[in-house]
Image 1 (cartoon, rainbow over the protein chains, first blue to last red):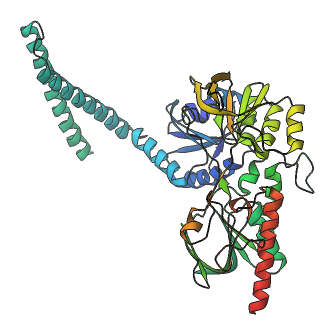
Image 2: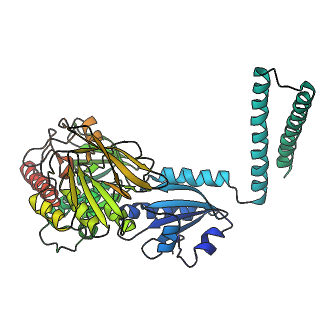
Image 3: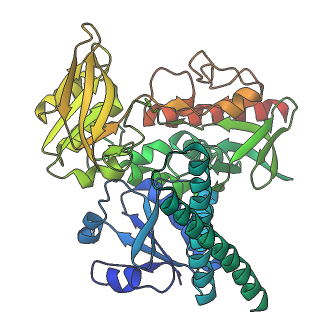
Length: 179
Length: 307
């Protein structure tokens, strides 16, 4: 039996948007020859990836869903995580392109609790690092920043955040090593 | 290395016909197809110009029948197998694919064409948001909407007629000064209220989320005009899939089509080409089918002489 689920207008919310794991939805129709090229690839991937849900929507029979996602060309693949659209692939593309997209989604949106925890903190740390760099560049360029005392307090506070950020990064690494 | 009597590249009407005739004369065939079975013919809305088809038969229905005939006989179809390299100089022709290596005495190249893109501003941005290369796949999304078809040959006219049955307004835009489709199709365009605009080039596609309009420029006066539309269907003359054949020494003309003689022989002994990839002026399902048959008949003759 196929592991790719047939989803309809009626159960789209339940099967796709409320799914605990990332979902790929293949929007297809029986009259579309290139859609037939894509389908077997998804059958294979559905066998292989256990943490990913593969679904298909027949746009001919499920017009509401097709309209909601503004489908105007098929085959169209849309990827969902936690009910949000996170990517799409248009047309009959090679298996490797699809595989890379599935891996990318899994990598960006981990399904286990530890993975999600790691993802949130990593993004936060990277974000802070980026803005610490920007502030340093700013500080090197501009000199007349008005009230020197307040400006210095700002820089000092930013430095404290940067130090905390380094500490957070170190603690996260230690934590991940232990679990 | 797997060996077979005949190997065919491409499972469109030319390749499937070759397989059909090979079986008829008792030979085995392997067909390699990297994409969909039936090739571009599977995307023809209705096959109105092929004997034996009634007017409601779709390209996909016709090619599905051809595929079934091959599979039921001595044909072996290797779908999703891409030919990467060929060595055609020796008596045995070597075909290397992404899945294996094969050897054959006779090779038929029936690799067809792929859609041409114009790369005008907006074309890539609105792919899947109003820009389409497959009217059969996407036509249904334009019910009661306005569409334009870019192209000037028979296929473009057929696509415009097909879309006129779905869309509220259909225009066929031809960059040549005159359509080069057959009279019967020109009449059909009129009957289906398709407006034909000739001598205009596409400058760009505009929109927000989806396509809203196209900008055309008059080839003579350079004047531009904007036409509101919801869909842009590209149906331009395809580009021949000949790169690997060319690299293996098969002669092609200036436009990249494989040069063949009346028996569909290329410049290399025992290597044939059939269908849209050849330099034959007429590109129809019926000519593709005839090419496949002609190539196999010559192979039978060669085989009888050598054995």
